[in-house]
Length: 334
Ligand SMILES: Cc1cc2nc3c(=O)[nH]c(=O)nc-3n(C[C@H](O)[C@H](O)[C@H](O)COP(=O)(O)OP(=O)(O)OC[C@H]3O[C@@H](n4cnc5c(N)ncnc54)[C@H](O)[C@@H]3O)c2cc1C
Image 1 (cartoon, rainbow, N blue to C red):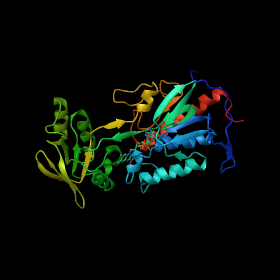
Image 2 (cartoon, rainbow, N blue to C red):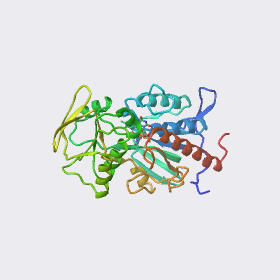
Image 3 (spheres, rainbow, N blue to C red):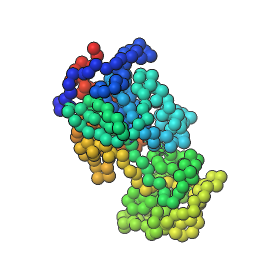
Image 4 (cartoon, protein in one colour):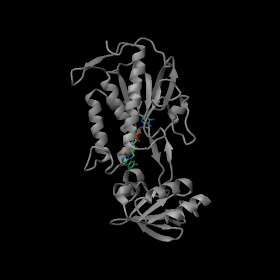
């Protein structure tokens, strides 16, 4: 099987984990080559860390601290939490679980990734780390409405007045008055999806008149979805809603869903030679390996459902494949 070649495993320091197992810390200065470096500590990266640490592999996990999960005020669709769980609580629990097996989140931003001499060089500013495999779990960033201050945006999101994920929280706007900020194919698809929750739905163009094909217009008409011209400005929150100026006067809604697309954090993959889709999502095989052997990706940065459950499932598959590939090169336990 094609996999990156590496020299015999170097001596790395070991320490006793809480369960008495030996955990290779891989924290030696110099040329230590870890089994895997995980970039990103959202649901995908943390799941991989838990799996890989429990496979007795030496890993590091770098994270720049902007997980999309950290924005979730309360998730009600993540299985196992009947009363819901906030994104921050979920991340804290996962970090605690990973740390129990010696996998610590290191607050560093990875700035460069390259494949050299049969392994990967991972650069964080002026520090360089080496690993036999790398898992990119870097996620995506939702594009925000133009002209909205960060503080206002964050408060509106915390109160469920701005929402980004109909799959996650469409249920919470059942029969409410809802606006989708977007146009074209993407805006139409999001509005149509939300039509499954409420009939009081308005698609608002982010800039002037809508840009809709005949087919989109027909679909919106068939679903009874109103259209309003933009742009939007002068946003204000009240006790249970969000109001703003549109191209057709001031309007107020119970929730606003921006459907403005996302920026995919796949730059490291591209720099390392991995292929990405037209939208910028990292392309992977069924085992989450990119077309650069030893380079894996999981979570929102890969095409998929953009859900915690999917990120976790992909990370479990990627971590197990990494483990299996490494074990083909040498016995993992000495
Ligand atoms: C408002 C909101 C509500 C949501 N609600 C739900 C819900 O109820 N249920 C659900 O299933 N999903 C929900 N989601 C979606 C969910 O948050 C994502 O699917 C999930 O967080 C994806 O996990 P991930 O690990 O792929 O990426 P992320 O959680 O985004 O984590 C990526 C991590 O990588 C780090 N990173 C990126 N680049 C670098 C770099 N160069 N160096 C170091 N670190 C880096 C980032 O800082 C970040 O911490 C919601 C999303 C939003 C925005």
